Amino acid sequence: MDNIMDIFEDYNTWKGENIDLITKLVKNHSKTIIRFNPVFAVVDYLYYENKKRKLSEDEKLIFSTGFDYVYDNISTISSILNSTFNNNYEEMEKCSQTINLLLYIMDFEAELNNQGNLKKHINKLNDLESKVNNYLDKKENAPDEYFQILDDIINDINDVLNEEIHTVDQIFYEIALEYNIYKDDNDFDLFNDIINKQIEKMKNVS
Image 1 (cartoon, helix red, strand yellow):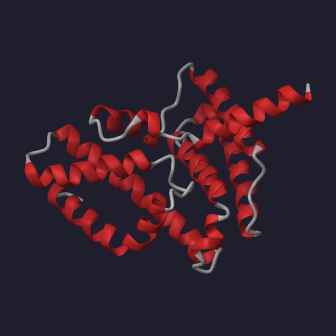
Image 2 (image 1 turned 180 degrees about the horizontal axis):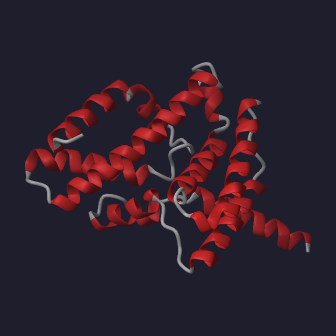
């Protein structure tokens, strides 16, 4: 996309082509997209702001990055809906939690793709992704424990890098708060919620 204006036109066209699926996911508060709702919020906000004023170069980059992100994620969801659930949205929604987990794993794989010193951890992510896909192929939800497994892998990676990895959705969450278009007290962190439930279960067992 060499011409920045083409990006906004492409976004409008893409959203129109996928409006039925996007509308269903948003209106039903689907867990498949709950993590990256802030990305949608920021991209939509900047799309309409561009009609009213000249965006800064940073804002144009934010828009482009966010558009690429939602494009890839919606494409993945659409592919799963078509190939695994035969375009049955209601059936797919029963596995929305597992699809959310799959997308989260893929986020980290993308972030770590060029990190040669993390090959062992990337292999663990790839293995976990395969296991999650196996559950989806059977139209079943992966165990909640898989969220804890992913969290453990991420923590190990953070220790190796000596810094915390920030995925696109996390960065855009902060951007959305800065623009005051996403309310912190209304946010629901599915990933951390499930991990916390697992920790409580472990406490009760011990």
